[in-house]
Image 1 (cartoon, one colour):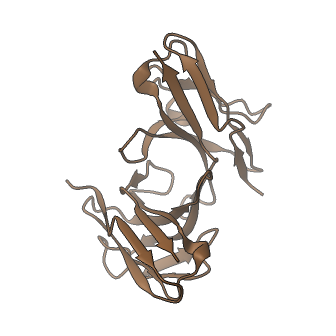
Image 2 (image 1 turned 90 degrees about the vertical axis):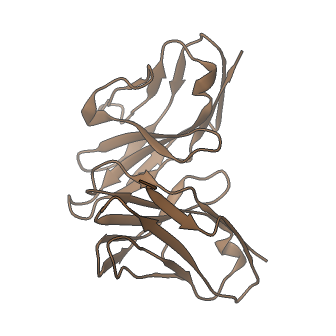
Length: 112
Length: 111
C-alpha cells in the first residue's frame, strides 16, 4: 500500500494564480482531511470529508475549495492564491473520525 | 472553545535523561487525546492515544482531567527519539469529529 500520496511536493505560485493539490489514498478510508501548517504552528484543519460526495469546512476554509467524487481522491483547490496561503499542506485519511489518521508527505506551497 | 497548548517549542535533553513533553487542553466535553510524532524526513504518525493506555517506544501519557493535561513521558531518552511531537484533541460527534493540534514541541536528544 502506498498509503496517502500527495502531489506536487513543492510549488511556487504567483498571487492570483490557481492550483489544485492532489491527494489519493489506497486504504479505502471513508474519512479524509486537509490541513495546513504555518511555521511554528500546529496543523489547522481546512476541510474534511466523511465519504464520497460529502465535505465540510474545518477551522480555516476561506480561500479553498474541495470535492470528493471518489473514496480515493480528495483534491484541494486554491482559486486566487494569496501570500497568506504560503504553508505546508497535509492530507490525511482515517477509517473513522476517532481513529488514527494517516498522513501524506505534505506539499510545500509558496505564494509570491 | 477547544484548545491544545504545548508550552515548549524546544526541549533539549541528554541521552538517558527523563523526558516530559507538556500538553494542556481546553475542552468542555469528554476529551480524546493523541500524541503524534514526526521524525526527520518522515510523515506525521500516531505515537499513542490515551484510551489505549499503552506504552509505545517507551513513551506513556496519562490523561489528568483535573489539571486538563496529557503530558508525554519517557524515563530514559534515546537519540532516536529526536523528533517533532504534537499533542492533539479530537472534538465533535462520532461522525464528524475533528482533530485540533498543539503547536508542537521539538525534542532534541543529545549524545
